[in-house]
Structures are given as structure tokens and as C-alpha cells.
Image (cartoon, rainbow, N blue to C red; front, side, top):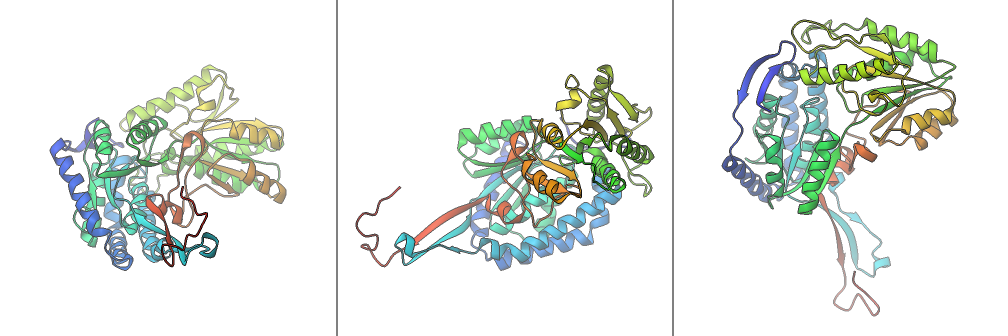
Length: 470
């Protein structure tokens, strides 16, 4: 795949780049390794100063950066502006909280026959980040901010269709004051990942992407005995029970399905509705979806912009056509428009069955599947009946049902009466084929730390008779 900015609203190639040579990549890894030796010795306060400076740059350059993201991958300008602001917020969150998150944690010294015992969190080195195009700034920042604040260095291999956003990220951290090599963008194709991750100077990897990409990264890292964090696909359920506020549920469902033009791993994709309220919800939801305006993502009146690639649009249209061929009913949308750009209308499909691709596959665009269920147990069974487990939504005002959903839904994130999203304060990640490990919160920072046990005794004899090593 060429490394190029192609405007998805027009299909026009605006800027292209030559991939870095093997020698250039090796030099970048060397700079990251050297930078780590310096960065790990800086204080948390110094790193916080640089991180806050990065946040200030993001805020100051919000509109220009948002325009760049919209041009590269098609999200609406308003959504891109919000993404830049969210990144600045995450930078400030880790600048303010890293010292607490990285502080030594005391243990029960007497229980382990020590004078002192504690856990210390220390950085591990250069971390490779393989990132997707759909949230080209945020998905990098939710790794970069905690990793840099912990004292690690970052090597970014971004998606090939957002090279200018990738280069901007490197530039932001450099201008904020981080040492040369602390964060480096590698303009390289996916074929370079094996060699990069196999380099002994690269200590770990994080990936947000497809299930196939996750398996590939995990295989390489397993061979090299390196830590990985994987945030993969999702086919998130949105369960609506009889007690739900249907107007509010249908409103949020529309946003949850079409956020980022429907191209989000945690977008609600399967709408599982109790039969008692199915028809009412379906009518409200389909009407809301049909009313969304599709068009120029730079236009303030646009709700849904183009998909990021022509192949992505072709794929979701094929999934819809397959469903129709197997008996599905399309309540709105479902037709691929003519003209320039990779647009697709918000679409609602019902009467689904297991013979259809949509039943089990992730649909990465503004297409919703409606499923009718007759009980709580059936709702949970359908919700969990997927290989994915990233996010889940449940709509009910029954406190007992709320507690049951929180326990019974197989997902890394369960949102009750709200839309799944990510916050710096909360851990984020999935289960099953949606990956493993966590981003954000203190857990996300510590994923790429050496969790070191420190035991301090009075002297050589402190361990006493009967002590043993493991």
C-alpha cells in the first residue's frame, strides 16, 4: 500500500511519501534507544513539563490539525476538532497523575521478613506502536502519553493513509521539548514490522487494528519474547430492554453506530432489542439514521462523511448485499451512491440470521443490524455470541438488570444507559478476539513498565532459616 494522503471525499491523491529505507529505520531505532537512556533518568516533573507543552501545542493548533485529519481519513471536521482536544486532555491527565501512578507501592515488610519491601515501576525501553487510521491522533496518544511519561520511548508505524498526521505527532513531541528520538514516526509499510519488532533494541509493541494484524504482531512478539498490548476489532452489542427510555436509546444508538462515519472498533454494531419494544425502537432508530446528512466532512451540517477507503466501502456494501440475499430486510439505506468519494448512507438491516456475514463479522461502516430477542437470557446469549469482546451497551432502568448486564456481558467495557467511549481515567481494552492488555488509566501506563519487586533486609542473615528462593 502506498504511503500517501488520499482525500476520501474526492479520491484525489494529495501527497505521497517514499518509504524509509532499512538504513533509515535502523538509525531511527538507534536514536530511540539512545533517547531512552537519557529519558529514563529524567524526573517525572520534567516529563510532565514537556507533556503539558505538547497539550498546549495541540490546543493551539487544533483547527489546522483537525483539517488535516479530515482530509486524510474523512471524519467530520467537528469530530476531528474534538479528537484533538481529547488528546490534549489525555496529555494533561498523565502529566498530572504520572507521579502518583509510578510511585513505589509499599508491601507488608514483616510478612516477607524484610526491613522494607515495595514494588517499583520502571520503563522498559523503546516501544513499537502499530496504529490504525480511524482515530489517527487519539489512538496514538492513548499509548504515547503514558509511555513517554513512564520514561519509555516510542516508535510509531502508523497506517499508510495518514502519513501527515503521523509526522505531526513526532513534530509535536519534539517541539514540546522531549529529547531527540523520544518519539519517532517510521514511514514504513507493514512488511517492515517483523524486522522492527525483532530488533533487540525494541522492547515491546502495542497494536490497534484488525484481528489478523493482532495475530501477526503476537506471533512475532512471541517468537522474540516481547510484551504486547492488542486492541483489535469489535462487534459491540447494544441491548435494549423493555424498561429503557426508547427515545434516548434510539438517539444514542444513532450516534453510537455512526460516530466517526461508523468506523470505530467500539461503535455499537449489533442492536439487540426485546420483542416488547422492538417495533417501537426500530421505527425511531431507522428514522434517526435516515435523517442523518451524508456529505462533505468539512461542512458543519454534515453528520456522516465518506469512508476512509474505496475498498472499505465495497466491503460493507458486500456485507449488506449478502444479508439481503439471505432474507434480510433493509429499513433504510443500503444503496451505494454514485459520484466522487467513498460515501455510504446510514443503513439499518433486520431479519438477520446466522447464514449472513453480518451475523458474526464486524461491519466497519454506518450499517446497523437489528436483532429481536424475547428475554434477558436470549439478549445476553446473542450479545455474547460473537468472537469479539471489546465494548457493550445495555439500556435498562431496572437496577437488577443493570447489575446482571455488568457481570454477564463478555466485554472489556460495559456501558449501561450510555455510549461506549474511552476516558484517560478508565482502563480500555477487550477480551476474546478483541485482544488483551489495557490502555489508559494507571494500568495502561504500567503495561510497559518493569513491575519490580524490591526487598531490603537488615543484613545477610535477615532472610533467616527456612527461606527459599523462587
